[in-house]
Image (cartoon, rainbow, N blue to C red; front, side, top):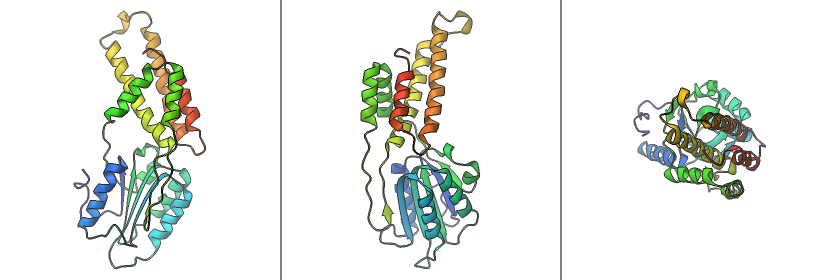
Length: 256
């Protein structure tokens, strides 16, 4: 997927790749190895995998990027994160205004829509997004059919926080947070609700719509609007994923 975008002889200084880090990062590592860039035990290679990239991480990255390399070869930084705070984006914006010779950055995130347009414009943008996993869709469909009490229990199980783990040497790794899990589930939920509505009410024309269908449609529009707002709030530092997701459980009709 990435190979057609990465030119060994004309490597861009900064790539922004939209996709699943578990699939994208191995491709980047393979590409680096094809350039004879060691991805372990190499002080000029750094892989940062984190849930939320904040101002502290941005300042550290800027510092590492501006430092002179230990060798005559290329310096490579891979950053995979679920989200970037506005402060961090501001720092990166200044950082990427002037490319640094022989220094290359690969930023990987699942959804670039939350990034500043001016920041995105600094990158070679690659979309490697794929369809939702079948398991995620099944969970969403199950959730829709649950009574309210079961939905709340489902949310509690879904948002169990995974412990962060730090790698060794030049690799920093962090597992997905509750915030990331919630965002992924919202995408599956939205898709499932849309498919369910289209399946149940396809072929209906407005003049002959049976009584009650307008109510269902309006209710779904309300749900989609609420999910959009929840998605925005989830990207804000300090927001409660549990409270926001419970509000989603409350607003979705028991029968669609």
